[in-house]
Figure 1 (cartoon, rainbow, N blue to C red):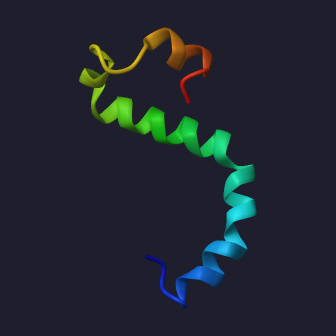
Figure 2 (spheres, helix red, strand yellow; figure 1 turned 120 degrees about the vertical axis):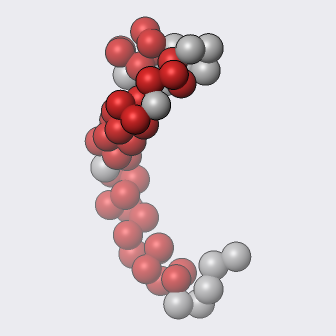
Length: 55
């Protein structure tokens, strides 16, 4: 549950975060797979990662 203090901050930043989601997702997946390449083995599709459809 969000606190009364957190709600205005989330409401104010949500449009910007939503707009930047493709960049955020690319960075997230890039860092995750760099740190844990074993996740490609059966959990994530390399081809879907490469063409961006899974992000």
